[in-house]
Amino acid sequence: MVILMEMDASEQQVAEVGRVLSGFGLEARLVGGGRKIMCDAGVAQAPVLDALGRLPGVHRVQRVGRPYVLAGKECAEGNTVVRVGRAAIGSGAVTVIAGPCAVESRDQLLDTARAVAASGAKVLRGGTYKPRTSPYSFQGLEQRGLELLAEAAAATGLATVTEVIDEQSLEAALAHVDMLQIGSRNMQNFHLLRAVGRAGKPVLLKRGMSATIEEWLMAAEYILSAGNEQVVLCERGIRTFETYTRNTLDLSAVSLVKTLSHLPVIVDPSHATGRPELIAPMSRAAVAAGADGIIVEVHVNPKEALCDGKQSLEPAAFAGLMAEVGTVSRALGRAI
Ligand code: PEP
Ligand code: MN
Image 1: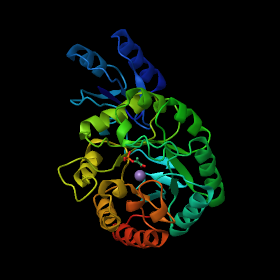
Image 2 (image 1 turned 180 degrees about the horizontal axis):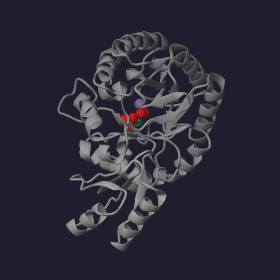
Image 3 (image 1 turned 90 degrees about the horizontal axis):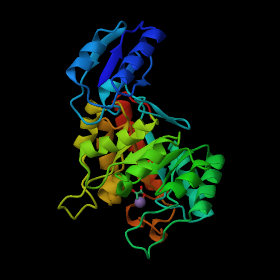
């Protein structure tokens, strides 16, 4: 249920709505700015809706016919803008996040960070707790990797994002990075979603590889309902029968989610395709489809990479990608 208040509703009127809601055993949450939207994640009965609709200062009470409420468009005024360093994701500008799949060494990270910063990326990515399919694969530098991310941020002015895989890695990451990533494999780790919801830092929520759009938005709802409104959704490809690409990029999900939710949506063409030659065309298409940005894997020496080298761009290719994405962005009147 969403309760839309009048523009000039007073604090007392908002408080009274909260009081009436709690009388019905419902929890009130105040979100949004100017119009003071109150939401309750519960499903209200008709008498509750009527009673609330008659209260002074209430403009409209709306039953939301979807399981997610806080992530839905009705629950915010305009689109959410998530600020990460110099990036304003969801503002209309195209944000580019780039960096290695995994932080491997000081030189590897700093050289890559300098290269992507020089080409115009605003946020540096780098995994330090890696969720690998094989227990024998490189698992990440953990704490040391976080320290290197902080060093790279200081050296370049880039903001940073890294994946957290449990509460321990979340705790460690909080002191070192600007944004927390929930990976595809953890999209339905509800305990972890609640934990990042309490963390007070922006969250990059990747779509589960077999998740429906509704399941993805419900995962966002977990974070929002725990009190964190700074959520960026990331389409990273879904599992299909196709084997020539690593996953199948669901670009329609980007445009669709923009109609359903106020949250920003970005695209990860690296994991979606697994093929460097497809990253530029899919990035151009993502921007044209309305994505708020892209996240791209870049490595100074992909052949030697400990993780996802095959899909990583070298710095020169990344510079070319930035030029192409810039052309499409400007054609659409969007800053980059
Ligand atoms: C990653 O970004 O390094 C990653 C593991 O991505 P995903 O969770 O989308 O597979
Ligand atoms: Mn990767």
